[in-house]
Length: 143
Length: 364
Image (cartoon, rainbow over all chains, first blue to last red; front, top):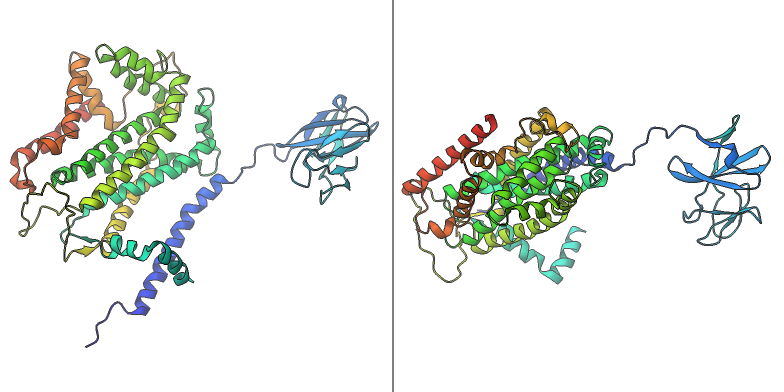
């Protein structure tokens, strides 16, 4: 007389049910953890960031904190402003402004960007991210 | 694919053999009962504490200026922060309940007796470490409750003759609870004690596995026996396999505890938080009726009953010492509860006394 362990199809069914239950519980436990770890939007993340006009001299760059990351605003010619993210598009270092040559240079791998943010030379794959600028009476609003 | 991976490890580490010896061929007594699952429940609860503790560390700031605000931020702003914090705080209480039940069941079945003295002693140290973790964790939110409960708890050590005052200063890092106390308690809570606890749990499990699971002292077939002086692993021929049979029972009781735990988290989250837990610490204003957590009420009330604090502390110390050395005091081979009337009388009276003094402490 043949002896029987649990029939394979019943065992497979049990595994599927247990696997499903485990997946549901993992999802239920994992979702709060994922949301907890996800960087939250701070209040003000959509607001424009003001920079005093007096801080931005013609031909100079002014670095400031734009919603938690470094940014730079330039006064290219009197009254004409442009703003960029100061994060190099190569590996995330912060670019510096060279007044003499009127361009940005990344200290990490020598990437160079023009005053319009376009790549002049070096490894950066794309231009600096431009930021919208609005000129108010005594302020420049970025964002 | 699964077979290839298992074959790879098996040919190098012999994992099939390890799994067989510890799961399917690891036999437990046929009359094993539900109380033996509390170890697995505790491991699960400790794992939840570690996971939620690590998550809380991401946003918690261990500095008196910012600690309370950081906990408020976790509770009110961080997505599911309230869940992580409540799981951690309620989990601490559920662990103490499970630890006490585990200890009481081991005492009832006299599983602490030879050759399992080391299992008992390591378990007793684990219980005390868990109390230590609760005490050190209590201060971290830097609320009125945290501040003053820690002040009262550390102050009790001042009654110890000669070294008392210095001991209090050492624990607090100064004459009062202050920034230094928070630094010390934080380091102990997140690193020192968990490391020690992890090692001790490992040793405790090693003891359980090495000496073998004790046979429940029930049923007509049970007979008390003397253990030899040399090492002997207690086998249970004809017993039930640990996997899958007992793992299913373990899982069922774990689910029961999780249901109880989550019911408190979702339906009574403030059960263990009095009002003073929601006010920032103020070293100049002591709130009225500061009481320790429920599991320290017996100690708190004992100190109040006796006219001299040193007598109260002495009695607590004596009780804890007796408990720690229980297997070396109660050495007879008899394990059946109803064949040990003296022990059982002390056991029942002890539990009633603990509950009565705790209730008295709560309402005093």
